[in-house]
Length: 265
Image (cartoon, rainbow, N blue to C red; front, side, top):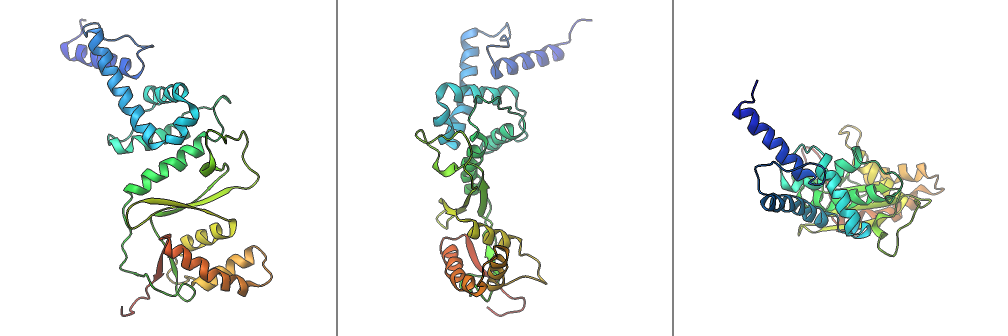
């Protein structure tokens, strides 16, 4: 039975898309001029490659142009995106690295973590703000309940992602994890701060401290962290921790303290 015009058109679309994804593997539809087809192919691929290079500048630089284009081509050819939004293409690329890409040992071991670290900057730049109605920006950080900003993300990596460069590309992770907090400032720029293990744990506890009936104030959170590390003088940790909490607030990692229900502002 001969193909209907609808079937012919569908087959042509599949052939067109397959050729765009990888011109070296899939021939172009026979009824499209080769010169025009190359224009389409280059336009689609270069648009995606340019967008991803802008989101992942360090990764693309460390891989080099040839290897970077090989990686982008694999993504372009094999990944089935779940979002049509152009700004979400970098997230689709990260999903490809996390779920589909197989490192055969010839690619840097830090590649996935570096990609995640670079993607976070874009993700935070477009993330929605948290409402401030229930936050006192000037609250006492020891007596009140510290509030972590929704656009401040504490992160932990096996690799020193913030130090990777053409002159520093380790082959193995460091002995200790790298802790950072990436955050968006009121002027919409994104900053990051490297944390020690104590501060990283402090932010983790603050982020988990959301039970309205049992919320701990800043002093109790510091005492808990002091107990976890076996510090011999928890009150010394509380005293030193007050400045730490205030510094995190000044950097907009912490918003302030939770307003008490029924309390007049």
